[in-house]
Length: 487
Image (cartoon, rainbow, N blue to C red; front, side, top):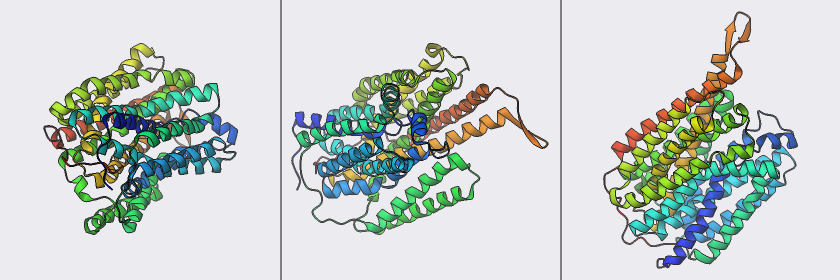
């Protein structure tokens, strides 16, 4: 049943509710990172296995995103939000009380499953609730700042909880976030029904889920086995073939999981590319800088998280002062490419990090410049990627936005980490006849590995600037005049 647009106050409070949910999902990608060393000691698992605590979440989250988005359209966004929040909270509580590594990994995977249900529904509520261009721009600025700063907030929160309480609270804290969001959803998100005829594209669901699973698994495996491993390329090939057949199937299905009409617009395509590229580069900030600040400069987990706050602040300022005022006047074309260039400059500044750094002189400038760039990318890209979407496709379009970011982050994780590790090994050790000799200072070699990875991240943003400049259309994206919420 279609409902009238929610009242002015209700939709802004609904935005707060779903932003809390989005923050919970976004920060869970990184909140566990700083806690890993202590969790490893408590549960006695190997260093080789610890990456599965990150990979299990990403695999479930990325591979089920399209299905979660379609379920949001079918069940109604409020119902889907409630299911996702309750499931995510339960999985987080289970992870916080895990007594074995297997239990912890399983909890992280279940978090990913319900995250895939929750994230598209949260974005869909914003998409269908705000139709007036100026209000829509402001709403997506808020939502974009929350999503874009989630990784940095996760590092801060993970450091504080690990240092002051226990690594287990890095998972259990989600129960509080979920409860706050549930209260807001119950009070301010309009109830309603999704499509009256429940029809799920089972073939498309299997092709998309298994295809994305294989792709993300192959990329994650490359981190530990390298790019020369046969199983890695087999998994990537299987994922590519299945996703190719998924596109063919969607073109012929009467009730497609992802209606292809969603991706045919140039501006939407350019926005999705921006949302794919940005997490690839952002990975270099959130991971390499975290290791650099802790392992090289010797900062505590809490101090490391605090030192990321300028990134969050610069992102918020850029998004609110620039995106909110300019998006509805000039559209995304001048904003996103400029944001990409600023982020590229931030990555280049990080290539100059020394072994004994002054935070104010060496780290802070890169964080601020990168944050300013990200603020110009996230909010305009997210708004443009969902502009003109009919209410019946809001969940599917929102899933596409989240999937682009999730896969982009996975690609960045695999590629940049592999580049950094291989570079470090190459410059620190030499293969001499019969043995391996390491002659270079390990710290210097590690920083050189980070430097090369930062140059690659800068290249990602540079290519992203060119692609988005030529692909995004000039002017403000058109919005459907009859867009009505089905929430």
